[in-house]
Image (cartoon, rainbow over all chains, first blue to last red; front, side, top):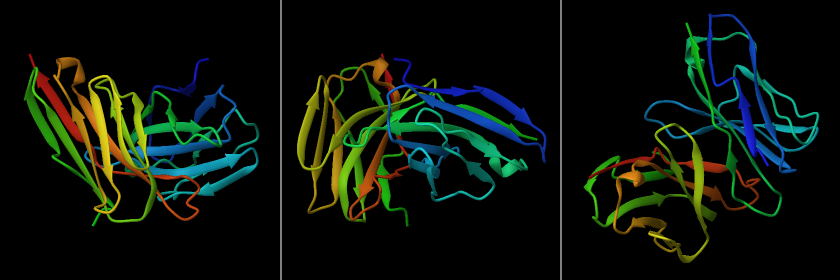
Length: 112
Length: 111
C-alpha cells in the first residue's frame, strides 16, 4: 500500500492563479482531511469528508473548495490564490472504526 | 487561549537523557493523540490514548483525564528522536473525530 499520496510536493503560484492539490489514499478509508500548517502554529483543519459525496467545512475553509467523488480521492481547490494561503498542506485519512489518522507527505505552496 | 497547549515549545537534550513533553487541554475529549513530525516534514501517529498509559519501545505516553493533561516521555534519548512532537485531541460529543492540534514541541537531541 502506498498509503496517502499528495501531489505536487512544491508549487509557486502568482496571486490570483488557481490550482488543485491532489490527495489519494489506497486504504479504503471513509474519512479524509485537509490541513494547513503555518510556521509556529498548529495544524488547522480546512475541510473534511466522511465518505464519497459528503464534505464539510473545518476551522479555516475560506478560499478553498473540495469535492469527494470517490473514496480514494479528495482534491483541494484554490480558486484565487492569495499570499495568506502560503503554507504547507497535509492530507490525511482514517478508517471508520479506527481513529489513527494517516498523513500524506505534504505540499508546500508559495503564493507570490 | 488555545484549546490544546504544549510545553515546552523547544527542548534541547543530550543523548541518553530522559525527556518529558507536556500537553494540557481545556475541552472534554474522547481521545488524545501524540504525533511525530520528522525534520523532512512527514507526520506519523505515535499513540492514541483515552485513559492510562501506553508504551512503545522507548516512548511512553500517559494521560490524566481528571486533570486534562498528558505527557510523552522518551527514555534514553537519541539524536534520531529529534523531531517536532504534536499533541492533538478529539473533542467529545459527536465531533466527527476531528483533531484539534497543539503547536508542537521541537526536540533536538545532541550526540
